[in-house]
Length: 109
Image 1 (cartoon, rainbow, N blue to C red):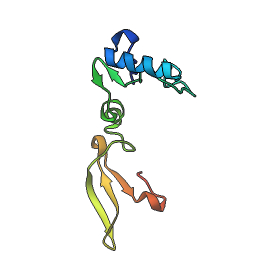
Image 2 (spheres, helix red, strand yellow; image 1 turned 120 degrees about the vertical axis):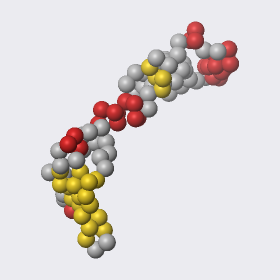
Image 3 (tube, rainbow, N blue to C red; image 1 turned 60 degrees about the vertical axis):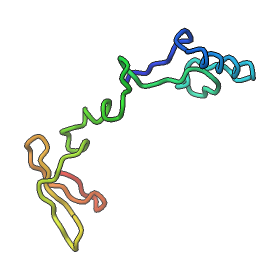
Image 4 (cartoon, rainbow, N blue to C red; image 1 turned 45 degrees about the vertical axis):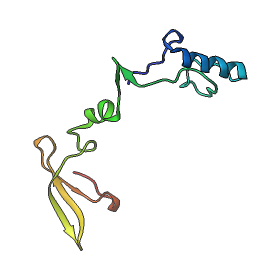
């Protein structure tokens, strides 16, 4: 995931004045807020690449689509017991798989 931090030359006058006032007040200037123990004032890191904010869907879910243990695959058939869904069949990538309720120690096989 791309992480971008605005350089001091990219800050608008209000942002630059705020950071300057906070540092004059006694807060430490922090260039990297992702550094462990970082406390103070400075540009916040943002997850953007080429001007596009990287959302969870763009960075993680796209790679998980089609995997049985990630993403979402619509069920082809659902098994019921006592008016509760207990299991079902899913077909990710054309391969039919049987799944059952994970809380009972089950999973997909």
